[in-house]
Image (cartoon, rainbow, N blue to C red):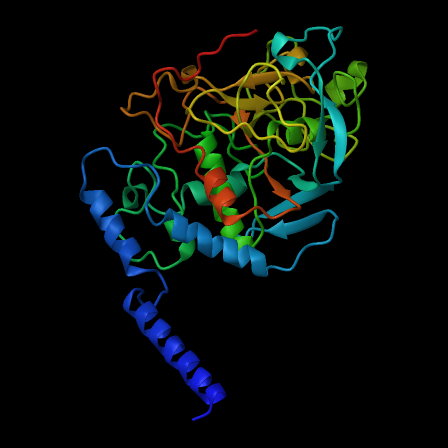
Length: 388
């Protein structure tokens, strides 16, 4: 037998062995049996278990491999549907660019944590045209009966969970009306979710579409909000009422449907007001610590995560392009659970999110780190900061 035939035979033997081993470790749905064994074990363990299942890395690897095989989209706006629900969403493409992050010292109503200004280079990305709505978020948040999942959001009982999307951690039952009585119709912005819940939604959407979605970093958010402007708002200040859902008279009782006001110069709606929006970063006062290109301040605590944009509950100063805020334990003050929910914030009826899709696909390790960066229990020093 010549060397080429020997090599061919070895390849066939290896493939047969691989198929045999794969079949022994997965059922006919393609879900590894070890995932199911872990789900049962986690459900039986009454002790505090890690919030991130061990199978999460394998799950992310599958999503990553799918994303690598998806044909790249042109650098243009697009409209798509969430495959499992048919719910539409729209993405606006923003070209890479440089901008001055933060506010100048002379800007009225500025806070100390908005400076000193720093020039940041931002790579190209798509951002959702609107804040995520209940129509888009709730099929994920209620994708299965709540008693199928542990407090961490991993499955309790693997029976009937035959799709990869079933294995993405999802929110536990919300104990009150998730919209706080403000309206849960399709075009109202979804609110009250933790950063962890928003990131898991991104993972759920990424698996279905083959595109990598996440929350924007703080610099990406401000870059998109400014839309090439350097003024406090991306619109003339005397026209703010035409662009922003805010509460200068302290009379509002609820949000408005997304897109009810005019968009900013780059076609993004509700960047000023309506609901505040989660960013990917941990909060730090000022910008001295930021890298000059595509910075991300990686969180190490549950609270103290950046939120931007102002809300229907706020006056104009809080919806300026440079205005910053951060999450803190008061967002969940009325939650009686111990540990408190990692999915819902019962005192944050003005907080939502929008998504981005970066042009450059990150590594598998980066995807894992990003999607799991919100899965943390409340720690002793969460939300404690000192302004310099």
